[in-house]
Image 1 (cartoon, helix red, strand yellow):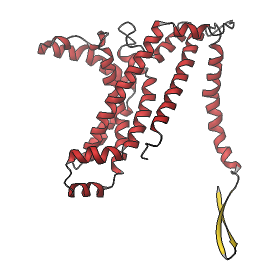
Image 2 (image 1 turned 90 degrees about the vertical axis):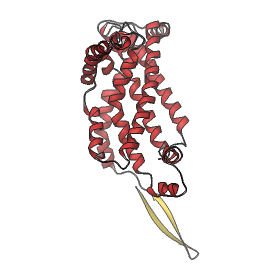
Image 3 (image 1 turned 120 degrees about the vertical axis):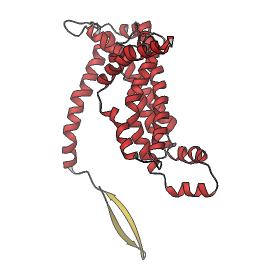
Image 4 (image 1 turned 90 degrees about the horizontal axis):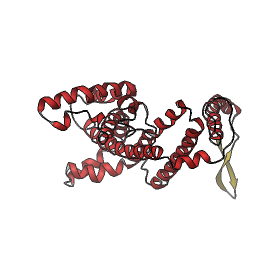
Length: 303
C-alpha cells in the first residue's frame, strides 16, 4: 500500500511516495494457502529428497547409502531412455500444439459464421479426463483404424500404431495434442483479439496481402502469447502420465515410458529411495529448463 505526500519547497510542490506496511489481514488470508502448500508440497518433497540418500523401500528399516542411488540412476539405461523419450515427446508435442492452436485461433477470430459455436466445440477436449481420452483413442488405434486400413488395402494402417515401438510415440503426440490444443487456442484467441483492428486496416491500404499481415503483423504482435504457450506446454508435457498409461502403458516394451511413469513404477515395485533420487534429478532438470526458458525469452515477451 502506498500514499502520496505533497511537499512545498521554495514555492514548488513535489510529490513524495511513502510506503506503508502491509496490513496484517493480508497475511491472514495468505496463511491458509501457504500452510496447505507447505504441508502438501514442500514437506513431502523435503522428506523424499532425504530418503533418496537411503536404501529405503518405502516402509520398514533403512540406512544411509550416500550418493549410491544417484550414481546408479546415471548409469541406468532404462531411466536414460525415459528421459530421451520424455524430452523428445515434449518438444514434438509443443510444436504440433502451438502450430495447430495458432492456425485455429486465426480462423476462429476471422469473419466466419458460427465462430462462437465452433469455439465451444474446439474447447470440449480440454474438459474431458485424460485417461478417458486415452482409452477412447486406444480403441480407435487398436481396432477402428486397422480395420479401415485393411479394408482400404493400406498395409501400414492395417496394424495398430500402438504395437509398433517405432511409431507408438506418434499416437501419443496426436492424443496429447488433441487434449492440449484447446487451452493453447484460448490463449491465442485472447492475443489475437488484443491486436488493434486499425493496424490491419492500415496494412490493407498499403497493399499488404493476408499472408503478409499474418507473418509481419499478427505473429510479432502475439509473440508474448507464443512464449506463454511454449513454456506452459513444455512444463506440462514433461509430466506426461495418464494419456501414456491409457494408450500404451509405456509399451511396446519400454519404448514410450516417460520419466513420471518410471518413477511411479519404481515406487510400486519397492524401489522407493532409488526412484526418489530419480525424481530429485528430474526436479532439478525441470528447474534448469525453466530458468533457461525464462532467460531466453526475457525481454521478448510482448505482454
